[in-house]
Each structure stands twice: as C-alpha cells, then as structure tokens.
Length: 240
Image 1 (cartoon, rainbow, N blue to C red):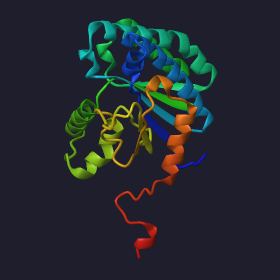
Image 2: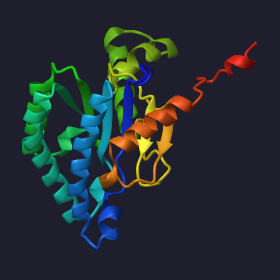
Image 3: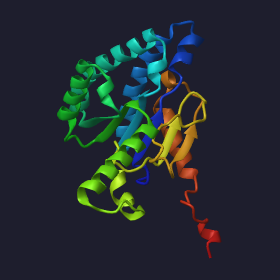
C-alpha cells in the first residue's frame, strides 16, 4: 500500500444502534465492537499502517446510563487481560491516550502493564483513546507549556509555543493522522484529535462499528488515494 498513509484514526460509532436493530440490549453491541477492534488492528498491521488510533471512550461518555458505563469498563478490563499477551505476540505496541486517572486502580494497572509489556514492539502502534477529549488535551498541553515557560524563563510567544506545545499532547511523537474514519453514518468530529486533525482527510461510512471489517478499512485507504491534499495550497496544474 501507499507509504503516504502512516496513521489512521477511527471514531468507533454505532454499537448501540447495531444492537437495537437486532432487538438486543446496547451492551451486546459493545461486545461485538470489541471483535471489530481485533479485526481492524490485525488488518491495519497487515496493510503496513504504522499507527492506528481508536476512540474507545470519550470524557463525555461518563454521562451514559450507569449500566452501560459499567459494561464498557468490564469490557475494557476483559480486553486488557485477554489481549495484551496476544498483542505482544504479534509485535503490536499498545498505548492509551486520555486521562486515565478517572479509571479504577485495577484498570490503570492493566493499562500500565500492557504499555510496559508492548513498549518495544514495532509492527504497529495502537493508541486507544480512553476518557479522552480533544479540548481537554489542548488545555492540558497549554498549561504544560505555560509552566515550562516559567521554569525556563522563556517568553510565551508563538515560536516557542509551536516548538514545545505539540510535544505536550497525549500523542507526542506520533505523526498526525492522514485519515480519520467515522463509522455509523454520523458526520462530526466529537471532540476527537482536534489539534491533530488539522489536515486529515475525513471519511464517513454508514457501516456500524460491529460490522466494520478489513474491506471497510481498505476502501477508506482507496478513497484517501483519490483525494487531492493541498494543505492550503493550489493544485499543481494551477499553481504556475
């Protein structure tokens, strides 16, 4: 595949609607969504994608019904327990971005163990966005930048902000995504990677997340290949 695609980010949407369409409780959709995660991670690694970021749980999702949040936490524990060794066996690096301090101690320890075990793996880096919000990320980075300016005695100006602030994001040292996919037909960004998506190509698919497959991922990459990315410039044939 094209070397121009290093990083794909996905807003995994539609679990609840998938379940409701089948007369099942919403929690069943989340369970099926875990299987989709496994398929897509495997497919992305096979396709040579270097980074895959999956929006698993937003900072706003805590407002969902208690039963649904409890099931999501149970599935997160189950995934980390069951899949960490498998990810490591396949040379996959797992990172979690977001404010993990809101999770219980058991989940935090499972995250830390998974990150520690897979840290040196090189096939693909999977960033799982958990208790993540893009505005929160930017505000935290700005606060970190302000503290750095005070510590180093440097003026808080545009040049130093451009140098230091990106390294204070949760995605520091990871290239911005070329492609952001949202499943389920919704067409909004939902507070996801607000800084990093400045020049991403957005692809919206009606496929509900539990049905998302390798074919959907390949179709997104094919669609990306047809896009004309100008980064604010002109088409080559009209630039003269």
